[in-house]
Image (cartoon, rainbow, N blue to C red; front, side, top):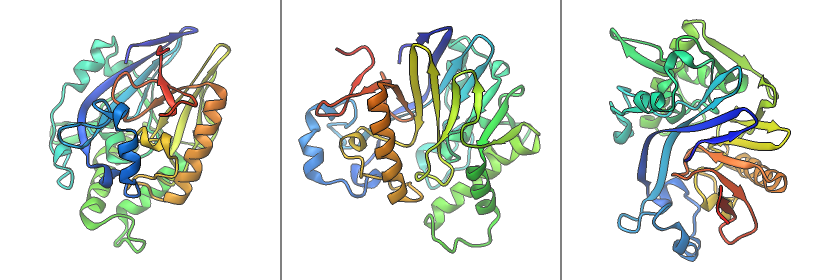
Length: 302
């Protein structure tokens, strides 16, 4: 994604990894083969790999710079994390921090880290391994967690059992490990802050609750006099969910609520003409919702 500049604000994308990732039926269990075939002409090769048949996805952060603050949104998977249930994420090594610096931002420059939710692929770079201990990667940052999100996962991480069977056992352990190595150390360091729906980070930049994918899932709105954008996290994982908003992902905590949230989100931002920045769309990433066959166009696309 090319940097976005408007009204003294700049948004950069920092990519950790991208490429063919999940079989369609794994990520979107209710996806009909007919729908995939109907849209294959524009899905390939960008969003659907024609050789492997896997959905193309990106794992990235966004960095927002205003005249007074530098904000990092979503921390990807992270390095050296124990994620055996997800081999591609297990003990991975990436040049993420080097890519951050290429944007002109050092870890020390970050004022706020906002996690749209606390899944492993959104919090990994919250911490880094130093001397055998997990420490905050961004030493001067205040880490913002939606209160409902933090309360759910902090309780889940220490529970003796999983009576609601939210996740199968291997994934359950990943979620608990994720909290221990990527969230708890930030809290212990005194760098976390629990925020409510509507919390404003800076003038025109505010958090909005968008539950369903997780209990406290949220998005980040940017509303300036002549510029409107939204960082949508996992409200939408893949463009097929724009074509059919009823398709919830396999990782949604409450699939019916996620459907309702997604439909309302898409309707609202289509009407507003917002620039939408999803958490997993490969580059060029930034889209504007419209009434075309695929339901969107890329930023700058006629």
